[in-house]
Figure 1 (cartoon, rainbow, N blue to C red):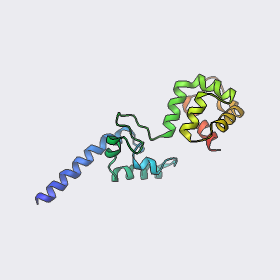
Figure 2: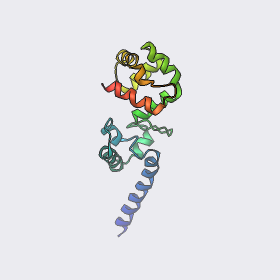
Figure 3: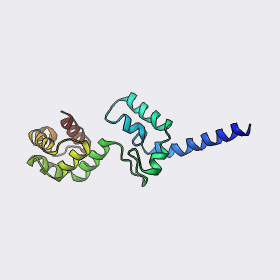
Figure 4: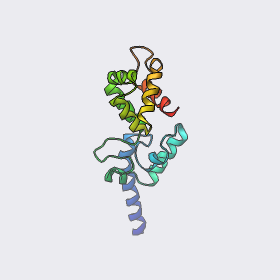
Length: 152
């Protein structure tokens, strides 16, 4: 009886410990699940990432700073989110770098996406009009287009 009570208490504590990590990013933003299913899109990979994170107690990754988690609270597992953050904070500089086909923002994004910087720069320069359809382009739309070009 005491053994069952102890196991129940440990399980409940684990659930409460995992909940804050999942609240940060409900799509499995860091942890083993986000690493295992990285780059996949759609509902099924998201559910599998969250399930994997739940099974392997994501709190270990958050506590130790492993599996794409940062113990300081930044969610670092989502590559798209990182690229979006770069674009949101450097939109004008990226536009200049894209028009030249090289630059610091292109190098940074290429590093995040694990692609060749020169190739990404050339693609951005060749597709400048596609990336910047008008002067009011949204950072999210631009990020999606950049990621599309990087994969092409």
